[in-house]
Image (cartoon, rainbow, N blue to C red):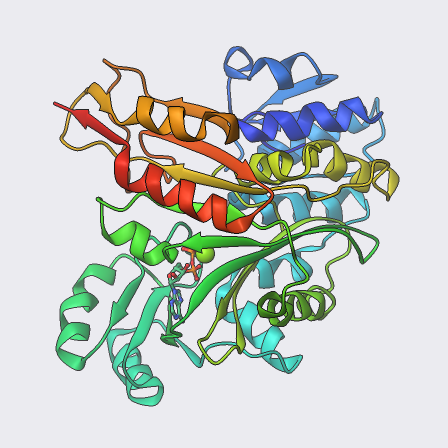
Length: 400
Ligand SMILES: Nc1ncnc2c1ncn2[C@@H]1O[C@H](COP(=O)(O)OP(=O)(O)O)[C@@H](O)[C@H]1O
Ligand SMILES: [Mg+2]
């Protein structure tokens, strides 16, 4: 398991691999003392090595391989997906090769592969120079999106409505070696996430972003909300589910977690956004667990180790998460509105995880969870919409 304790949820996946019978060797750049307990207590062995030094990782594992057999290489942390694929090739173990992993990392290669399968992507052109961006903008038209081909968390992503705006945005992209210039797709934004084994989808998840992620990133006053949906049979999700089922074979995905984003236009058409060969971040796996009363960490581990999920995963609830950003800079001073909201909805609130008074604010641009989160759940979607909207509007954190 590459990076078995960072980010934190990796430790839950590591623990799950061990829980379903795997003997797990961790390879990571965290010092052993910094490993979360869930990982430290379940790893059979830990190699502390810089993950950015591929030669060092390979060397460490070759030494180990004289004593133990390495049967699988798992990595759920985006920056090291290619490293994991290289290791699989070096050790001749099954799973995704470098060739298969690249389309999950390079958004242009991704869309080329999806286009070739006849699936609807936004119009897109890649560019490595300022002149090429202008040319791409001519072809694509406004409004458009400019974004890195290997971005994450909406970093360096801009909606551009005119040539004047493009002129202002271009200097901000100087540090990005290659961008995608895309048609701006208006609509609602959803995920389509799966756990697969041997090319079969064993578990599906659809999450609704409110508002769209780029909006969350642009305006600090917004309380980003994610809702994992209970009923996946409603008509307006079928385009995305169908698309997801076509995208996975188009990219040759076989086993593990996937996280796709798609747009639903007002005319109902589904348009591909992007896909990762890993679970979604920002506590979405926990939302899946709250929605199903299940354990998706274990379900993934079973899929990887045994090729099946032993417990059926039913969706009982819609589960919604609201991330809060404090007003002001510095340390949290007080929270307002929580008592009233808890009095109204307490029985449906499954998690309140806000920074305590006195804690320094987190950087909301860098981490979606910002200064804390609330998770609610209910079998009726309308109830979750109402509760999340009220937590967004009426719960206030302050800092100074
Ligand atoms: N072609 C597009 N049309 C409309 N919005 C887009 C488009 N591409 C990106 N966005 C917005 O920017 C966000 C981030 O882009 P995305 O491709 O998902 O990259 P990442 O999440 O890896 O940063 C999306 O969630 C969406 O809100
Ligand atoms: Mg995205």
